[in-house]
Image (cartoon, rainbow, N blue to C red):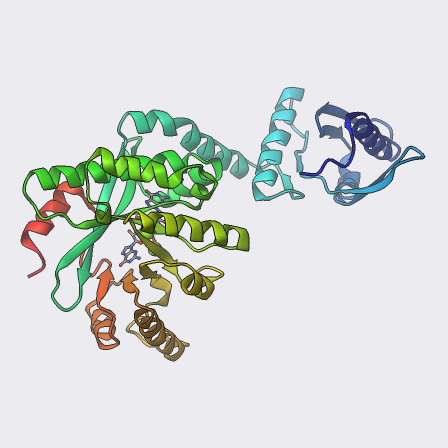
Length: 381
Ligand code: C2E
Ligand code: MG
Ligand code: MG
């Protein structure tokens, strides 16, 4: 970030900010600074709206005769009623819970405390604070969902999907992956999954089985990681595996800067013989650009694009789009696989339009390693 003002000048701006608010206070109301740019206010209920409006757009001027500059501040606000509360610390705790919730939504948001928000925050903190211990204790398990060729019903690979044995139940990624992504811990989890997959492949090879390619989901957070390619290669080499046995699934990128980073990563992985795929194709922002410019080997078509067998409005559009997506991706020399295929009828349709690989409940849900091994032994016939 570019520094606009020095510390002393910044203090003046903070003071001007506080003074501006202070001038509006009525009897019994107050404002105090917690530190940094965090403030606490105690205001009358009937003027709450007015303060929120004021704080969401405050123009503060810095002017010392030499430098003159205007700043617009839009406060992120959490608030709570004091009704029925006996201790000041209790109302502070509530306001601060509401503030955390507002911040999670994004800068400039306003949130009122509620029991729901508190529960939500406790759930989040529970996930984040138990993550490392859970990882060390082996609470995370890798499940494998087969990838199948429609024509032959041959299993040619699988996707590794993580599960968390937590508090006596099996927790699925929706419950923790987004939270770990926000917090950055997802990077550790992804490497854990990759290592488990490498161990499993090593074991299979040592037992004399023909190994198959396993894909691992790598969060977008890895874009911020230094030496991602080196780390992945080192793990695969630690288990002395052929690099082609590992596929890294990446999702589409929203902005151009990430887009360039993804290109770099994909090229780096490919230079090392590691397969890359685009996950959830069709749900993101720059799908076609990604396909055009990034040298991904596999395109995984998201389940929202797979036409359902029953009639519904817009089905004809879905059919057209799916048909030409398959055609286009194949013409570009990439592999396609359809995700989330659930029924035999869908399978028939996919076969007709020339899609040759699927992953979905129609064959199997994600399976624990032992069940996946059984499936590999008996197949689908
Ligand atoms: P994804 O990578 O797109 O994985 C496919 C998801 O679709 C899986 O959900 C899978 O169980 C589900 N699925 C497969 N076939 C069907 C079907 O026929 N019907 C329906 N309705 N669903 C099907 P899951 O395992 O709950 O994972 C959800 C998402 O969590 C994944 O979506 C992936 O984005 C993320 N995830 C899972 N494991 C990891 C991981 O180790 N690291 C990271 N970063 N993300 C992960
Ligand atoms: Mg995936
Ligand atoms: Mg997907």
